[in-house]
Length: 47
Image (cartoon, rainbow, N blue to C red; front, side, top):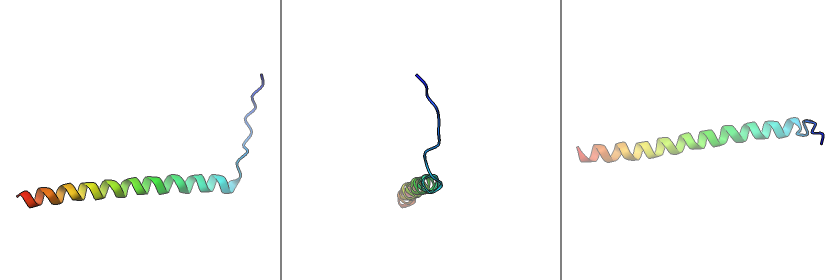
């Protein structure tokens, strides 16, 4: 059994993968900021 690694993805596919990773990281950061702002808003209401 012979396994040879050959890059079959083109430059545009690699670029799309990179932008996808950046998009999901940014979306996760926005969700985190939204949830943390909700919790801080609740804490300010109680005080």
